[in-house]
Length: 340
Ligand code: NAD
Ligand code: ZN
Image 1 (cartoon, rainbow, N blue to C red):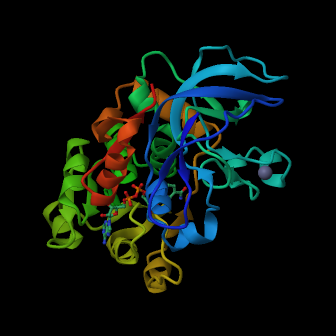
Image 2: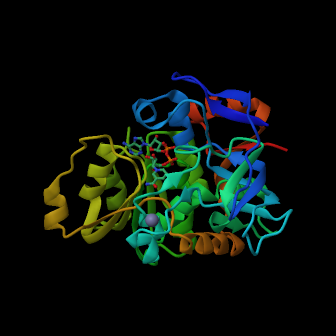
């Protein structure tokens, strides 16, 4: 089968022929329809410092996907050939204390598809049946393809009560844009989104953000004054930029709550005075809750949340290089590749 493989320890990604995997006990074989390129795939493509210490060359990358079940291994119940599914890409151990306590998103033994084992940028993938997420007919495949990062956005945006609250989102990458839309959809008051990229800020505005701020030439404090606000009740850090995080802590209202999704560089510091004297809550977010986040995000789309507004490009998989170039340029929302 065709697959996008990280063949060499250098910038790039290679289309290769690899063996079709086989579904073992409690697993299904899925034929991919559409996949989406994640920021993580871009890191692997660019071969940055994180990839160099995490990825073993020879890996089939990719974890955002939708496809149809074409093979069912022994012991699988409740799924049928032809069924359209996405899947949770974090495969947990099932026997650690957190897994047994129903907190699988906190399993310390998590294995990620497309990072720690072969992924979804291929004609076929094998997944544990327990990770599957059936996609309702009303949801088109080009949107189901990126439920994984949509789940990161939903996990973050739903972690604290945002109804009637003022929300600051730092970083208008695809995840920040989707989080802004979710917060507005469920009834936040002001949703202010920052970035340094005007293309992406426009996507956030289209998603319904109250204000978008290019912090290269405007400050969040000015916007707060404009909106007659004393500070933000909830902050969602989705840039991974230390300056953005510190600006956020500066702009939080006393007693505010901050969800941290963006991956900060090693050694990034914060002003602890802001946390202590304002009585802030800081909460790290990893992945999606299994499977509460999946239930909620599916229902949000079925209730009219305009997820499609973050989808900027759809390409046939043979144009994968163009897809990665678009991601690298920053002039993109979600980029989806078709395998059929
Ligand atoms: P992305 O890289 O596409 O978006 C980050 C955005 O932050 C970019 O648009 C960038 O221009 C912007 N930015 C840079 N400097 C900024 C500043 N000073 N102020 C405001 N914005 C600034 O990433 P994404 O795919 O949307 O993901 C968001 C973050 O979440 C990334 O750091 C990613 O690595 C991380 N992530 C974490 C998890 C998790 O489970 N914790 C999962 C997925 C992604
Ligand atoms: Zn576990």
